[in-house]
Image (cartoon, rainbow, N blue to C red; front, top):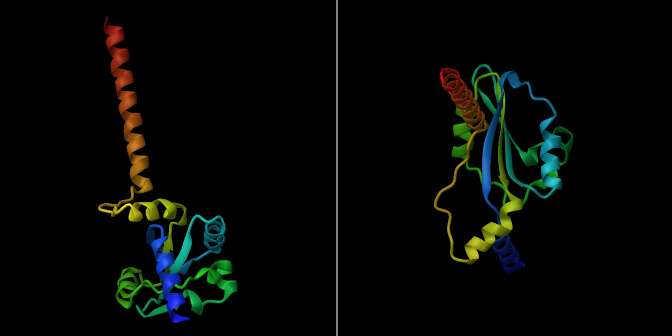
Length: 169
């Protein structure tokens, strides 16, 4: 039985897609329930698989309460509680402590680790072909918006210069 479980875990790791993590802070612990259904939709659609989730609540005095996904009631997080996998517990105590230290007193945070299941077939093919990831990154939406705005400003400046040249001829 243990050999079969080991083989199944190895096979599932071989088919694993890219894994990401994020931390979302809720100042004043003003958490609203809109996030759980959105996350649930991503899981149901097969886009992601929740691997680990830790909720962090930091009191005004700096004391911290931690809640693992399996500590929570389904009513608190909807169907997300049912998604924890055998690959869960990827986060170490040091990871959670570092995040908790960054959370402002009187706030809550969610630390989420997920697999991008949509990319798993490609990632698996890369591994089977002997490839390995050598760089990875993410462009923040704010940077994209700033680049679009700068491009629009540059286009406006060029249009104005073109109009001035046309008037001068």
